[in-house]
Amino acid sequence: MCGIFGTINYEIPVDQQEIFQGLWHRGPDEQDRQSIDNLHLYHTRLAIQDLSASGRQPMEYNGLMIVFNGEIYNHLQLREKYGLESASNSDTRTILMMYELMGMKMLEEFDGMFAFALYDLKNRMLYLARDRAGKKPLFIYRKGKTWMFSSELNILAQIAQPEIDHAALSDYLYLGYHYRKSTPYLHVSELENGHYLKLDPQSMKEQDLTWFNMEEGYKKESKLNHADSVAQLDQLLQLAVQRRMDSSDLDVGSFLSGGIDSGLVTAIAAKHAKRLNTFTVRVPGSYDESGLAAKVAKSYGTNHAVVDIDFSNLQDDIESILSGHGEPNCDNSAIPSYYVARAAKQHTTVVLNGDGADELFGGYRRYVPFRHLDFFQPNNLTKISAKILAGILPIANEKQSYYTYLYRLLKFASYTDVVKIYCSASSDLFVGFEDQFLRRPLMKEISADLLAINKLPLSALNKILLMDFQSMLFSRLLPKMDIATMTHSLEGRSPFLSKELLEFAPGLPDHFKIHNVTTKSILRDLAVNYLPEELINQPKRGFEIPLRKWVDEELKTVINDYLLAKDTLYSRIIKKSFIEDLIAKKIRVSDERRAKMLFCVFGLEVWYKKLIQKNNRL
Image 1 (tube, helix red, strand yellow):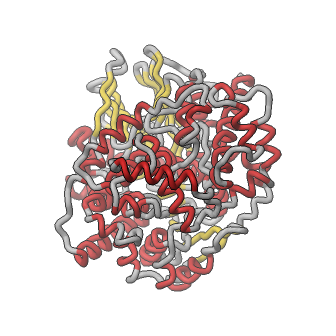
Image 2 (tube, helix red, strand yellow):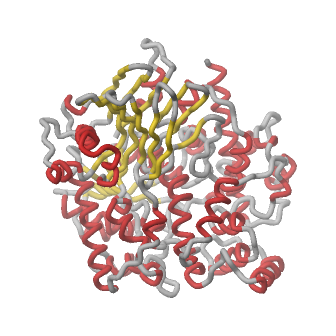
C-alpha cells in the first residue's frame, strides 16, 4: 500500500518535501522520485509484500516505469499461468511483466485493488488506471498542458491551487458526497472505477477507456440452483480471503462486528492464520454487538480486542478527522472508522473488512421494497397516495423503528423524479427543500446515470444495487474506509470485492438476495456453516452512532461556531436563514434527519476552513 503523485509539464523543486509529507501516512517506509521527459513521478511506500529493496518505486523494467498503489492478490498465480519469471516477488514487477506481455488487457486478469501510473518509454504513452470497485483513489488536475495526479486530494490541492467549484458543492449538500468524477474543485476530477486513461504527454491527447463495467454483470443471469449457488459463493469467498491473507509478508487482522459479512470473513481468515487478530467497536448509547463478535472470536480462537470508543476527545478530533478526506464529508460513520483503525494499527498493518457485501447481496433494509415494487417507475395512484400519507402522518424520529421505515418508504414513493427518489432512499438530506438553495443542485451526472440505469432491462432491485455500487460504494463508503485506514498507515482489504465475486454476485436471482423481507438471504444461508444462529438473524446495523446527541450536545458548540459564523461558504449555496431555523428546530423534519443535514453543512465548512488556512500559509 502506497501513495503516488505525478506531474506533467510541471516540476516541483527537488528540495521541497511537500509531496512526501502529504503522502507520508500512505507510505512511511520509503520515499523516492523519478523524472523522464516531461513526466515526474513520486512514490511513498508502505511495505507489505516483498519487503526487500526489489519492491522500491518508481520501478523501472524493460523500458517501462510505474508508480503503483495497492495490491494484486493473484499476481504469483498469473506469473505461473503465463510463464513469467523474475527474481523479485513484487506484485509491482508482475504488473510490468504483464503489460509487456499483453498491454492494458492485463487489467482483466487482476484480482486486486489498485491505482497506478505506468509510463511506456518506447511508445511515450502514459496510462492511469483504477481497479474494478475503485478501492484505491486517484485524482487528476488538468489545466492547459499542466497535469497532476495524486492519491491524496489534499496534497494535490495544495500544489495545484485549483479554484472552488460551487456547483459541485451544491450537489454535495444535496447528495451527501461527491458523485463519481466530481470533486469540490474546478479542473480536478476523480478517475472512475474500472477505467483507465491513455495519455500522450507530448501532445496531451487522452482517451478515457472503460475496462470493467458492473452493468454487464447484471445482464448475465446465473443458471445455478440455490444449493449450487451457496456452494459457489463459499468457494469464491474462501479464495478471496485466502489470497488476501497469503499476499502479505506481515500479519493480517480482521475487523469483526456482530454482522454476517465480517463474521464470514473472519471465520474463513482464521483458517489461514496461526492466530488472527480481530477488532470490534463498542460505542456507548448504541446497540452493543461486541457480545456476538466475541462468540465468533471464541469459536475461531482469534486474538480479540474490543475497542471502546468513548468519544471523549471528539470535539478536539472532529476537525482533523473530517479534513483528512480532502473534500467535504458528511458520513458520520467516518468517526468510529477513524478510531477503530487507529486502535487496529497498534496490533497489525493489514486488516480485512466486509466492505461491498451489502451492495452486492442486498444488505440494506431499504432494498426490501425495491424487491417487490419498481419505485423508479411507479403508477400515478401509488405516487399520489404515498404523497398524501407522508404529508399527514407524524414525523418518524426513531431510527430503527418499523414506523420510520414505513415513513421513509412513503416519502420516496411519492416522488416522480428519479434523482429525488434515489437521494431520498439513500442519503435522505435536503430532498424536498430545493427551494432553500441559492445555487440549485444541478445533479447532471447522477441524473444521466439514473435515467440510463432505469432504462436497462433489470429488476428494480438490481437497478438500485447497481446504482449503489457505482455511486454510494465508490464515492462514499470506500473513500471513507481508505482514509480512515491510511491515515494510520493501515491497509484495509475487502474480500467481497474480489474479481470473482464481482463477476458472480450480480447475476444471482433477486430472491437469493432479498427473500420476502430477509436481506442478504444467500449470505445468511452460507453463514449457517460458519456463524452462531443469533448472529445470522441480526438486522443490518453498521456503526450506530448517536449523531442526534452529538449535534445537540457534544458537538453543539463547534458546529454552531462554524454554521453561525459571519463568513460561511454554505451561505453562498443555501439560505443561511434556513440553516439557522434548522439549528433552532423550526423546520419540520425528524431529529435524525435534522442532525444529518447540519452535519453535512458542518463538513463543508470544516473543509473550507482548512483549505483557507492552508492557502494562507503558502
